[in-house]
Image (cartoon, helix red, strand yellow):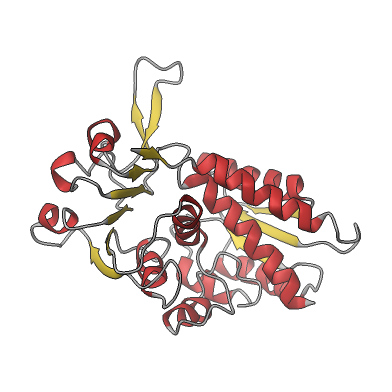
Length: 290
């Protein structure tokens, strides 16, 4: 059984990007502008991680924070300014947004050429049309890169995606359906309304779990020899930890791992790849602008 080390693979990508960016003039390097609304602790942590990674690569990582009371119109005015700024190559609006804001409208307000998270209607539409000239969402792209760098083929395999979110499930399925290397899979998408869910997931050669429920996938839902990609990040109580909690995935790792050909841990699996692929998209946006 192989434990797919997302930290190690993400670090490889970051180092590759750093080497490429280091060849550019210091006054002309990729710039990502991160926008956060409110003080959600997880969002604060994620934005800082992205800014730190940009700095490590040698990119500019700028951050604007709006108060949680900001209106949708105030956010749009900021995005209009960033869309028009030629020194900004990529823009990311950190989700989740406050309840009074529309995430869909916000993602669609970004210039498609700066939408490095790949969630706008234009970039998602490109993905549907097998047009990779834009940006694919970072987490699904990270999954493909994990499989590619681990040498796990997808062609002809049955990929079951558990979850249908815009952020992960839908895009992951589309990427696996793409014609060409690390696509060409037969894809089934499951969700909370799927009947006989365990019977469907047990057919998977590659199971992508992105349902957002801690340790939901049990060993009776996975066939022997499957590859399991766990996208879930769930915090559960743990009295043995100083913090009183710990992170677990959507898969019951201890029970499922012995069955698998390969599996990603949580933390240290898919999570680090999301940030690495965001930086890769930002460099791509910079090159497109040039």
